[in-house]
Each structure stands twice: as C-alpha cells, then as structure tokens.
Length: 95
Image 1 (spheres, helix red, strand yellow):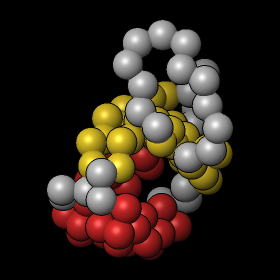
Image 2 (cartoon, one colour):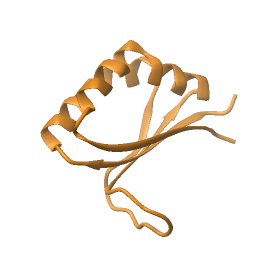
Image 3 (cartoon, helix red, strand yellow):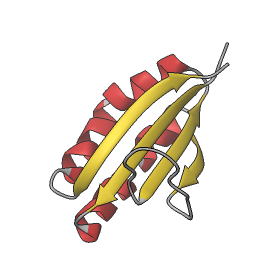
Image 4 (cartoon, one colour):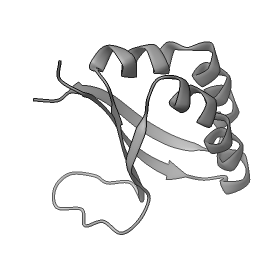
C-alpha cells in the first residue's frame, strides 16, 4: 500500500498562538503513525508563491493522513491555529 503525505505551506503571523497548535498536533500525529520528514528549515522557492514554513509528514497510507486530519485530536489543535497564520495543506498518495 502506498504511503500518504501531508504537505503544508504556512506563513505564521502569530508565533505564540501557532506554538499552541504545533504542540496540540502531537497526539494526533502519534496516533496515526506520522513521521515528520520536514518542518520549517531552509528552502528555496523556485516557482509560484511560497510560504516561509514548509512541512512534509509521511503516513502509513493516504487514508491514515485523511483520518488524522479529520480526527478530533487534530481538529482541536487546528482550532488553536485560528488567527495564527495562513496555511495551505494537501494530502497526497505516494507512489
């Protein structure tokens, strides 16, 4: 079964509030087998509009990534992100 990937591009506008979100995601990510491959760090924007924070998280499957996103644990963390920045998130199936 192909792995699933959570790809997020984020601009943080309120770091203290965003930290509450980041801390809150741990339970959901652990529950659904997340493996964080990239979170922040150096990057080079080659095309299109970018964001200063880029995140790649690997899951055992696309369904696990979807279930994590829709879980009560993640949704509670997501509520803490409101007003803390702009996020674009996509879930994709690996090959």
